[in-house]
Structure formats: structure tokens, C-alpha cells
Image 1 (spheres, rainbow, N blue to C red):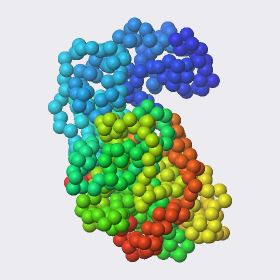
Image 2 (image 1 turned 60 degrees about the horizontal axis):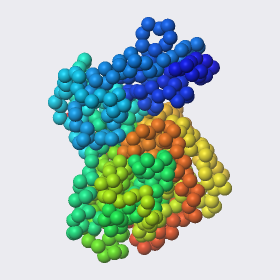
Image 3 (image 1 turned 30 degrees about the vertical axis):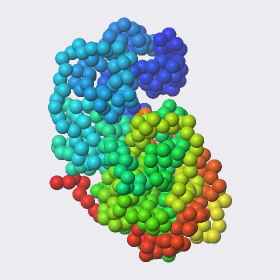
Image 4 (image 1 turned 90 degrees about the horizontal axis):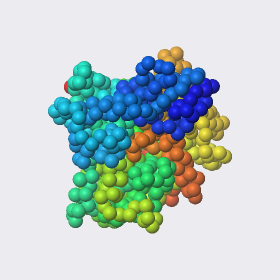
Length: 581
């Protein structure tokens, strides 16, 4: 342990703790712009400077370890003046577009400028006129708002291993962009949105499609319906000041009806449906040997994109089951339309998702038009929904609890845990075990696949056979798992795993690129806890026991993996180049 003093307050911390983290232990806030809890310190911004007694220079708190006997001063006249000057330099290279910026009111640069009381320009403004990159349709890069902090580059390269972003040029012309100065759509980008989740300003934001939804809601010829993803219910409250993990399912149902949606569905329902199809697919491969192992889950569109570009040697291992978003979309325009005698051409399906890549998924392949129409018309992020609720004048937090439309709205505990890393695997194991043995798991909470370790492994005895599973989240962790499978192939050995779950974003969907800002592991844990609590609170906790799912098969789909289920609920994959030309 290291003993030192910060602003005359004694602090004891483990050796190697940064001055920044040590200061937080004694409730001293050192301002930062480039540092994020998920990322390594780069000391890029210079805002976190502090002074050590006897030292002849200011040091950067984010990357300097606290040492024995240090006496750190975090705020004095000189330090504050240097920080203010640094902020003024950053602002001189930043547009004055706060009122029309997607991060207005949630911008770290804006907040710091207010904290340091910078009322006017003191340095001549130089903002290079560069048009934004809107090429992906999911994420927008506004290069003029970049402050060169490097967060997006670090998360894209080190956490996600995508390498779509890098720094170009030098000096005052330095900017963040895809290598080679190509568009984001031409780059290896998988639209996960982790760059936007970690950007401190409005330089990277989701493509805001709320105007299209408002337009549809005001169109009397359209039948507007909506679905909400598992994780949205435990994160949207953060946009209204509630703690992470607060479950607002009932209030969301009520608010969406107030907005004008004629039917409110729940993606948890189609998560249960996904499990029935995916667990059936796993048993076809594991028990009946009809297909290669391991089976790899396919709910995450960023992971699907990443696989098709970098790991297409695993295409045959991918589950062909569509994501819950797409399953519910096609059922809304077939099953729901048929039951209520509606013209599917008039149904306008909106999904509320934690993810920017869900916007890309809507047109990924022709199977996303299996209803004969675009199965999901618009995907909004959690952040976009929060903005719509605030615009609407609805007193969201004081609404009475609402109910979903039961035809595509009931769900089980297994459906809700989809939003957490390991949740898809756990839900699938609950159902696969029952299908294989006719019995329920004695312990349905599969602890081996829970938690925030980048790679999790577990074993389960299923009818006397050992099922080996792995879970990876954050795309950089996928290599570890897949390389183990490749090595076994080379040696002619059996795969070390039978079933693999991958989620592109750290923590799974609760850490998605479209979730409320400020994500770190502390928030991820609270969000996940909210999902697990929802699972424990449900009377039914196995997907195959969802009565509405059972009725769906009886009345419409036939049997799992049957002809109609395959036509509507399954997709295909194609190897694609890493760079588009």
C-alpha cells in the first residue's frame, strides 16, 4: 500500500494506483476529458494536471502513479489557470453549435466549459470545414467536433479489435477518421457504436431517426406498432435521473401508447422465440449430429458483421436464427396482421434498441423482408426514445404501469436476461436441457456464464453428456475463443466448446452503443442486476413455457425449425470483404 496526501488529506491506495483514482478515494474531483474508466490513460487532453510538492513541473494525474510520501495539490490558482487555457485552446478548434448538437446537455466539453466559467472567446477560432460522414446510416461522424482525445480510436482498436478509426494528419489539422481517409461504410466498421458511447462530445452520434417516427405516428393511414428490447427497460431511466438498473417496463408500455402506438409489443417475447429455435438447432447438432459444432449465437448484428468480414470460416457454425428484433418484426406483419385482419403494408414497425447496429440490421439481407415488406421499418436507440419522451410532454416517471399486447408481448425470465452478457447462453441452456432430458435444471441460474470477465467458460451435464460452453463480449475477446476452436481443428481434435455466445459490446446489450451515456463497469453491473432481478420476479423462467410462444407455434408456425419457422425466422450469412471499394 502507498500512503500519500492529496490536498492535505491522507490517502492509502494499492501500489500502481493513479493520482486520478486515488483522488476519487478521498472525494477530490480532478477534471478530465480524454480519460474514460474503460480505457487506458493517454494523457492526451492535459486537463488533469496536478502539482507534487517539491516538483518543478505539473504532472498529469490520469497516467501518473501515486508514490509513497507524495503531497499532491489538485487545485490552486496556477493549475486552474492552465486548465482554463487548455480548455480555451480546445474550444478555439470546436464549433459553436451546442444548441443543435446531439450531445447538447450531455457533453463533457460543454460541462467543463461551464465549470470553468468561460464566457467568451479569447483565442481566434479555427474550425476546418469538413462534411460529416453519414455513410453507414447508423452512426454519424462530425469531424469538426472532434477534440482529439483518442477515446474512439482506443475503444475501436483495443476493446473491439475493429480498427475502423485512426488519427490522420498532424498538428492543428489532426483528426479522427477511417484509415486512408475513406468513408466509415467503406471501412471495417461494424456499427457497434462503442465509439459514440465513449466520445465525450457530439463528434460521433447515432443517426437520429425520430423525425421519421413522429411522421409515421401522425400519418392516419399507418398502423404504428413498437417493440422494446430487453435491456432498454433497465437503462432508459438514466436519461431521467434514475439509478442504473431501475426497471421501467410497465411505464414504457404506458408511455409508448401515449405517444400514439396502436400496439406495444415486447422483444422479450421474440427472445423467448429465438431460444426455442436456437435451442432446437443446438440439439440437432449436438444430439443428432446434423451440423457442425460449436454452434455460435447470432443475435448481435455487429458480431454478425464482424464474423462475415473477419471470421467467415465459422459461417457454417453460426445459428441461422434471426435476432429477436427481426423475428418480432416479421411476426407483426404476418401473424399479428392476420389475426387482426390488418393490411401489412400499412403496419409501421418501430423497434427500441440499445444498439446502433440494429439500424444496419434492418436491411442486412433479403430475409429481413420475409413478410413481403421491410419487417422492421425504423430502429431507435434508447437515447432516441428518451428524447421522444421528453419532447412529448409525458410525465414519464409518474405514469401508471401499462401492459403490452399479449399476442406478441408476454415474456419469461429467460427472455429478459438476453440483454446481459451470458444471458442468451443461460436462456438457451435452460430450454436445451429440458428438450434433451424432459426435466428442468436443478439450478437454472447458470453462474458460470455470468459476470463481466471478457471470456467465460462452463460445463453442463445434459442427460449424461457434457456440454462445454463459452461466452465472449467485447469483440477483441472473440479471437481467444475462436482461435482455440481453430487450433483444435488443425490438430484434428474435438472442439473445446459445443456452444458459444458472442456479444459485440462489453457487458452485452446493457452496454450497447445506443444506451445512455456514461457507461462503465459500475453501471454495467447495476444494469445487469436489474435484468437478473426481472428474471427472478417472473412466474415463468423458461422460454419454451411462454404460453403465447406455444400458441404461436400451434396456430401459425407449426414446429420449431419447421418449414414456416425457417421461412420467417431464419437467415443466412455470406463472406464479405473487410474494406468496401
